View 1 (cartoon, rainbow, N blue to C red):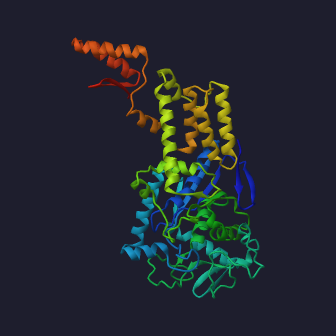
View 2 (spheres, helix red, strand yellow):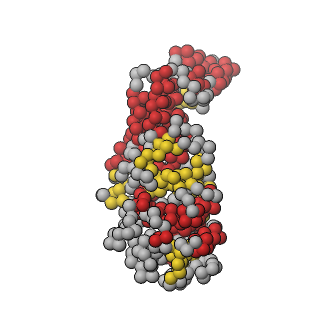
Length: 480
């Protein structure tokens, strides 16, 4: 089935008809601090998109950047480099800071079951292509040099800011997050390459035709995209806060460089909010994955919370909401565990085979409904509601419910199979009358010191995937 996504660039839904090589790029973290759960809501949405594409049969090439230079505290052309600022405050090198927080970011991604990109693009390792892009833009008269810095001249790109509703003709328009810079020709212009930073001890600098300096984060993403994907891009991901500044600047750089349209589809995720404000490091109202773990939440409780809301809707975070998600996730696992432990060996074997080999039409109907929901703008929240409908259905067998749950989990990534097995380690297995009789026969055999027969019965259970555990209360059966 073809995936439809809401395209911020066209303000309409776009169909992805190319199944062979879908090039996807996500704006990754600036590694100067731990990523917070507001950031991770965006990365979970990106993860859902990548897994949905692959689930539907698309061949995906997925890249993410790591910004370790050039992202200023003002998010534009003002302030200090965020990584350099943290390094100075902690008495470490920028390389040590970047390496530490990059590793921390991907560790948290693993806890949240966020897929690892096919390619991680670290900004400081791609300086030559950034310089080359600026040189070509300079040759095309898209730049100017002012006060020691190379600026992009937005008046040369007539469609600048269209995605964000910016009108270059409107001189009185107030731009979001843009400060006055007396060295700009136009208030929408932005720096490509800094050589004259007010922070003279900037640690990461490189020689260039314009002097010793460093790139802006807008240049970094655009240039690394152009280098890695060789040309155009299919899907660009990010948070809604990137629409009005970063992404329109990337578009300007890339399309002036290519002299053609660069990226067809831009998809943006909404904020995770606390008390009606977005979660933000600058506001100091951010929570990390470790903070959740310290309060006895699983990272997957937060992932479940994210699944309950569509990515284009703001999601209100509170400990009460997270607790409700924790209870719901545990209830889901408990119900599925009951189904699982009630299965006979034949049904268990079925679950280990082709999950999509449906035996009943009602199974296929539920599957088709799930595919329809996720194919229309990633309606995973509706898919989660459908899973609960399946759990409660009286028209499906236990094995059918488990099969559908495991299929849905290829995208939801709640580790349902693993969590069920972990859950059952602490629960007795439901056994039939024949098994009860064998357990009693084994008890008698052990009392009569007929250890050969006792071992034969133990081995019989082992071949069926069960372990017999002798306790003071009697023999318990657990799954091996």
